[in-house]
Image 1 (cartoon, rainbow, N blue to C red):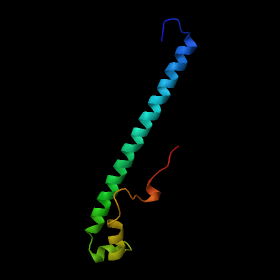
Image 2 (cartoon, rainbow, N blue to C red):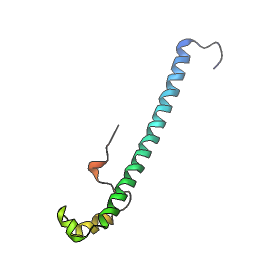
Image 3 (spheres, rainbow, N blue to C red):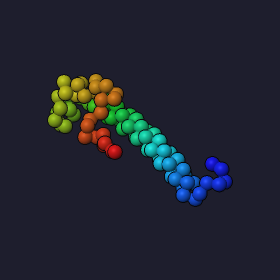
Image 4 (cartoon, one colour):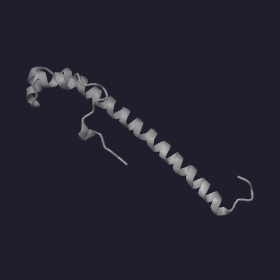
Amino acid sequence: MSPHHSHSQLHAAFTATGDTLHTAFGQVGRAFAWVELAMRVHRERRDLARLDDHMLKDIGLDRGQAFRETTRDFADLPRRRVSVRA
């Protein structure tokens, strides 16, 4: 921008740049949060796979249910744990 631009033009340019950066950082932050959640769920599934039948029964699961949960894809996260933000 040349030194001849008005204050309102400069303000508009900086605001647009700030909005773009805020959006980009927001998207990166959401991506990191998703990866963190996916890793947490992966660890929980790994721990679930290590439980014996008696322990599974204590939490209301059988071996088949545990197997189905522990073999889900890394990206297949429980909907109730993924927050959707606009």
